[in-house]
Image 1 (cartoon, rainbow, N blue to C red):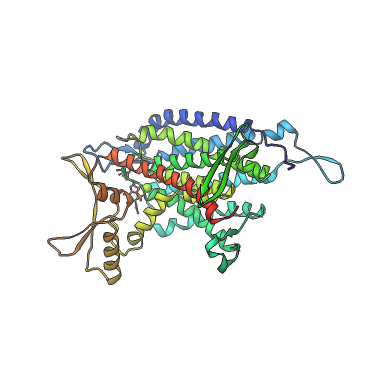
Image 2: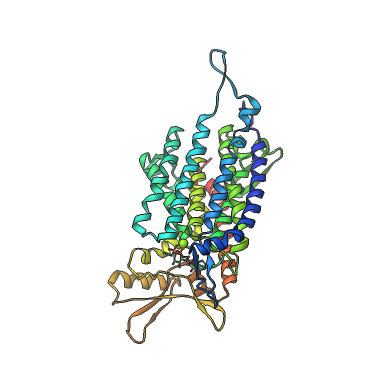
Length: 447
Ligand code: UD1
Ligand code: MG
């Protein structure tokens, strides 16, 4: 088939260099600026330690600044093909016109805008502890530039219906405005879901790092590598072949330079993010010398929403959020007030053994029928443990977070072990995600 010329890849190599640069700057800047943050009263006590030393908090602001400044510095590299090829396009009348890809620049700039709003919101949250109902709409508004660009590109709003449901809905369902609603909620979800899976050293940063690496692996599958490989799969008696890289890369299989460019765009945003997160994790690892604050959760979450929307793979992206989705669904009874939600739901630290135990929330009054039902179901599923407070006779439940579930299921453990369990679950989630995306999709969707 006739293919567009390949997009040049020097920008990809530059992005790799930027990632290394991001790592080095972050590793250097975080300890250098820590005392300044403490002096500005941006510090917190490590709840799961014996010592009281104030730990500099909201160092995510340093990460976000390094990240956004590097992304701005990268703009000329992202458009290097304009300088290299003069971008000559032959119009229908045979006149040669040089055309600058304004559309691509709009995609890039609107993404930066959303990242900056996320940073602002995250930092304000660190300083003022903003209430839930006040901060929820902000990422939705921050996503409007992204949605407008998506609209300008005539982005897809169809969803393919899985084969078993086609008799009801047909092959394609056009969600129209609902699809835009879904994308704007995606940014709220990705920012907040990382923030509520937090509280032990390294948890926020490692989630962001693994999700970013997963997105990168997914993007790499779409690049036109000089070599290619095919994976034959035998599923349900039928044979399918997954094609990666080379002339068969997924991007080229659709004959589309556009697809390659979208995944390159995603790489430009994800590679430096990995550099920043890896650099920060070095200082945030147990025992933490710096805390990310809400700023890091918001900026990384928004970065994922940005690439998911702009590079048109929001559904694949959601698959990389399996632990966060689980934690969010689990948290709902506490988030929506059916079960009391203490200010901190982090596990309980036992000073004598140095181990973490599930933390608990006490009910203030006899549970309503709905609350009693929820407690029944969640404890039958083994997600929480319910005890009765001896003095009040009211139920006392372990907090509804994935970290407490690990402690309920696996028993008490050290903080650094718990974060490794969390990291393993995130990696397992990503492996499952790739299996669903490239294995199961062939079962549900023909083609
Ligand atoms: C979210 C969670 C909250 C959890 C908190 C921990 C919900 C609804 N909210 O609140 O349950 O307790 O994150 O980040 O689920 N901290 C540590 N060790 C760490 C990281 C943080 O002890 O490794 C403590 C420090 O005291 C730090 C504080 O948590 O100052 C930061 O909490 P903050 O991010 O403000 O909490 P929220 O995001 O509001
Ligand atoms: Mg937080």
